[in-house]
Length: 76
Image (cartoon, rainbow, N blue to C red; front, side):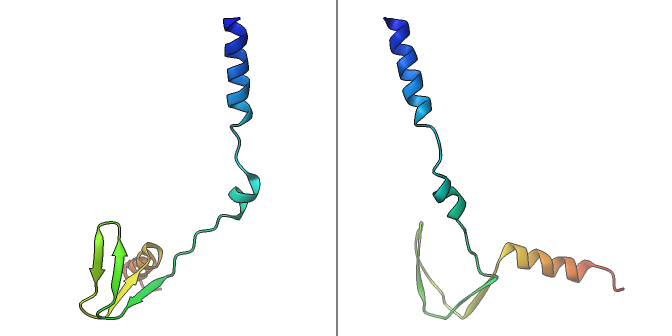
């Protein structure tokens, strides 16, 4: 009886353990290359509200590293 209960529990748990293919295939994350924030703009973050003191421009990590590589590459 105990073995049968464990077997049924295992079947039920593994039968539910699958991802939804439509959700997994349609998830796309977008991050802009630059983010421009005007002075005085308030932005809610997980740590509280951030208020830009001056006009700011934030660069994505990819764009930043591209510019670093360009600056450090020898002139051809």
